[in-house]
Length: 137
Image (cartoon, rainbow, N blue to C red; front, side, top):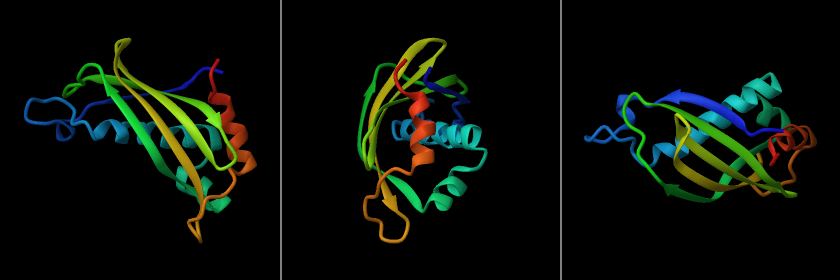
């Protein structure tokens, strides 16, 4: 299946004085896209799906490469591909672009944790099955 795609507009408060999106916001853009993936494909909010499953995810690693700036009022697309689903973690790649031009690439590793103990825990079957749909084509 194709990667998940989400569009958003860069808001003024996300920019530095030069009206360029501040670098930390790119991770927020990926989080926003992930939240919408859950809403669209699980028929519930991210929080509802995770709480119902007794899990959450934490970012264990993040690597971003900035290729060109996103600027105030740009319409950008966030593309998410699940590269690997392990037992307790997943590796995700993301491409943030504007009109087909790559702005930022990201590689993230998320670890699933138990909501009570915060210890790593296996990925629940329903979540695994849905996320597997967004693997490499």
